[in-house]
Image (cartoon, rainbow, N blue to C red):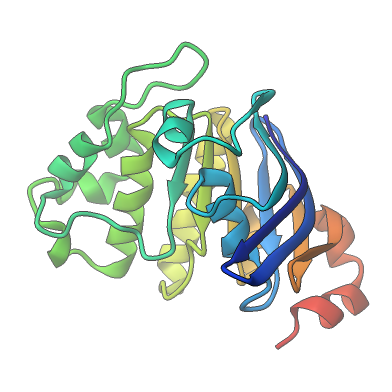
Length: 233
């Protein structure tokens, strides 16, 4: 569904990504792992069009998207939840969800407000509350729910568990597993290895902008030396 081939990206004169290759399939969760500054968030920004690549190819459903603006990429069914969530603080939960609504697409699950509230029961109870008055975990759930209102086929999540209490992280993990069962493809950037183990099928370790490992979570768990080399503090 999503393919990166030889992706290079930079902020001004500082190159950050060097030849990144990556694949994401339907009904699959792939996690980008690595230390702070390794290039995980930059990879997601390049995919969604917030950082134009220097070179390389990004394909979504076989079509190149690396030359498209972000709104065009979103219209094709690729959603993005940034690390800082970017919800509208002055709007209610329901209003935030309505802002994200897009027409149904034939090849993706259809997300109504009713289905959102089934997936996120806490949001149903908070439907009329302003987003500014939600907890961090509730805001994260709202940000994901708003992205689903676009009926996406794939979802990019940047550090979704950061700063959340363990009980909320567990709720988030169950939500992502439910979305995978719906057929959604999920690519997330994470530093919480325990959370990654809970949700991810495959892992991609990025170090200094290059892919150092790509394989199953089981294979990564079986190689403590690799984890110590690239994931230890």
